[in-house]
Image (cartoon, rainbow, N blue to C red; front, top):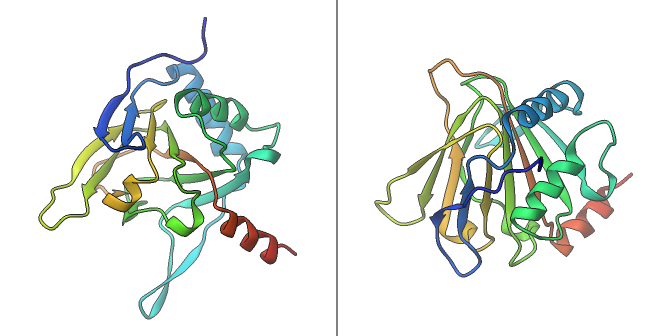
Length: 201
């Protein structure tokens, strides 16, 4: 049996680079659950702080990051990369992981930092664990946010162009929700790679 399903993509936003597409059942439930447990227990999770206005605040989720040319053998990131390569082929260079521990963990409405992304290349987001609602909103005055319930084993792909036209985020919720992990594969720009080299010890 094929590991990955072959669902039709749901187009949420259309643009010349593929827009925003959603595959609700990109991987079977048993595999998705095993991947979640492996990352929850084995990833290098870190808490971070960031400046906001005149104070330093804790990032409301745990983070981890890996280069695709050095994926650890004890984590299932390689088959995840194969999955997103099948759905949205691109020369992905990094995997960013987010652990939302409960409904109080979140990420504000934003677009990815464009200078760190290679032009024309997509971002592919794999969801594992509990379902969680993402909001997608056009950057136009009066635009309403469109809710997308990200299911475990689903993949959401956003074009580079969509980062110029739309914002996305995971709001807090008072509803009881279980932990969720997102794995986001990106193609980093040459400038961002150079910055990494400069920051390396």
